[in-house]
Image (cartoon, rainbow, N blue to C red):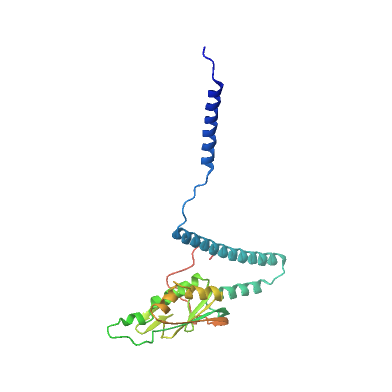
Length: 241
């Protein structure tokens, strides 16, 4: 019988241990993929959306906590039920636009490009259209605007913004330039939403030379919706509503 060679056995054993350790180290190494600009922008957008969702949820939590406190007060007999109903009506009227509101915000003054153009230039690029107003309103809403008016017409979810020749119709009424848009909310956020590079307001101002003046205000007033609400087709849904 041939005798085992101790050196050969030791060498084979060392090779096996080395391969095993190298495999384990390789499995534990993190795989780093290159970070692209698009990936960063996507992540930033996701973070912003998540933060906005958290902010909305916090508002809902605060509202529910206030409702719970009211119910507890009613149960204890500390509050008059009439006062609570009146407060509820007041809050609902404010949300539906039937109450004038006051608060900090911004004032935007928009007007057509006053510069004279050479013959053949498309004059439509110098005029404010309904889509321009709609895009500005949308950016303000995304930035958290709580109340908006155009030329002192309260903007509701049902308000139409429609071109009518040289004017724009809002709540069934015609308005002409300059269009003065007032929005209540965080002045810094509202200002940035229409002034930061790449925003629709920035493009109107710097690319199309549309008159676009911005002003922050510590306090401004948004008027109430002055007409009545009529529902010809929609009606409350569900029992008890």
